[in-house]
Length: 117
Image 1 (cartoon, rainbow, N blue to C red):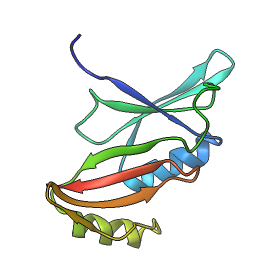
Image 2 (image 1 turned 30 degrees about the vertical axis):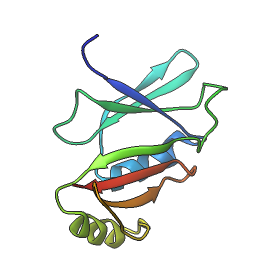
Image 3 (image 1 turned 90 degrees about the vertical axis):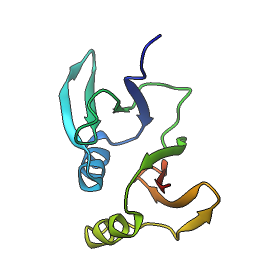
């Protein structure tokens, strides 16, 4: 084994989810037909080796079931200001012994944690 390359995020509406993740700062890597579905793959700029795909086809992964997906940041306060200006709601900052965290929820309820060490 070598690296993690793709993490599936279960959604109900790929287009709405794609727009949310674009606003969050992800970029679109691939959007193409995939069997009878559509493949939507995104990554943070400079992080193309680890990406997400917005999936609708795994029955054991209902939309909104992701919790604990952590995105590291150098400046949580700046990110919160930028995301709030884009209309994205960010939860309160939780200060822990291993850093600061703030939650963001996508349109389906998948919970992402922004983390500053």
